[in-house]
Length: 283
Image (cartoon, rainbow, N blue to C red; front, side, top):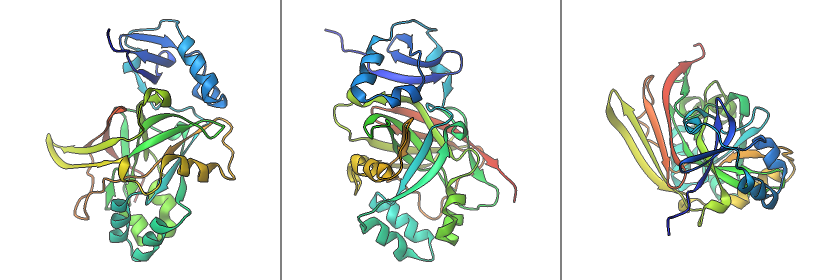
């Protein structure tokens, strides 16, 4: 018996929200926001009933798989390697050690949906920063009821120099033009047998690999439901949200991104998110 093709949810330039099942594409006919207003049982029924055929190439026309009014939130210091990396960059290293060990996680606003970039689009490094890195992360697509609807790859681009100068500069280190990439697609939670994801980050420069690092979500100090629970504790998300869960792949202090670099983030079961690096802003 042939294996069933996994369901991938894309946002296509020409067709809007579509489902890809191997060789077939079907129109979703509702937005992600509308899907995430439902609970998972309702949303799954809607997805499985989708049958209107669309272009066979629609799933190659990548947009970030998020709606304009949705939000991306991110969690920090969820891996030991992230704690060590943040301690290396900061004048107050104990601050990050305390966050790693605390009951309450670090959660911060990352991006609105209309600012997020998709697969094959450019990510940015600030012109007023001299030390910049990608952060390859598992993204949780969470519905309005606080259920994990699906998973997506996220790149939480970061200025280590700005955050290292002062922890209160975190919003400037994390939130700027082209600082949040998502894609290439969403995988519904019921398509994943076990939510443990090996992660690989590769950076190419002038045709040569200048950095490669690997990790796994199994190395996280906090689990996915815990992070969602803290975000939703006093902050309703009526159209759902995407929650980036932190990174376990941190280049050492001698590495920084250059304009023209290509960042590939591969997560088992979720595909590969690929972006080239440009400079944004003014000094």
